[in-house]
Length: 233
Image (cartoon, rainbow, N blue to C red):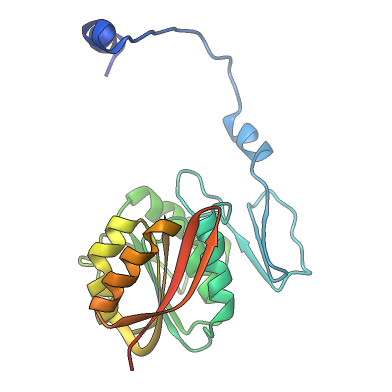
């Protein structure tokens, strides 16, 4: 849309929508520098240090994850990502197969690899996330073993069953895809979900029960919830 088109739209709806438009020239700014000023490292307990490439390393932490998020979701700053990583730290990953559904920056897939998973798969529906995720995999030395796929869980080629399936998306997508998750999960596997509010837990728990998944753990941070499910025996 060029300036004339924008002005025509504003004029058409100005009275009905009470629009008020102002215009000003923004001084030339190094937006990358501004972003770096306000992007702080993240700590998950005393084990995980999440930083961008311009932050100093902290060797005292057992796990260090490099994430340059650009426009993708998943830096550890949000309560959902933070809780998912905290749950990952509680579950064994060594020699396990892991799927990160709706991977965003790829942070959960990176965490799985660093926790010793034998095989990690990740995908997202957004081409920008796929590009950014693969950049982050390379930053963490995983470019040779991990590449992000493009598409939905019903479209991308998958190699289940999975011992851990991670999905930090949103309530509606999770409700729609729960049957697929259940079908891909190993008999003793764990499904980790987040991306919804505390008040949404009953809906997720009920939908999970319909596909023979039982709730093992729940976590709430700043009203955002995370859940761990496992198949019924």
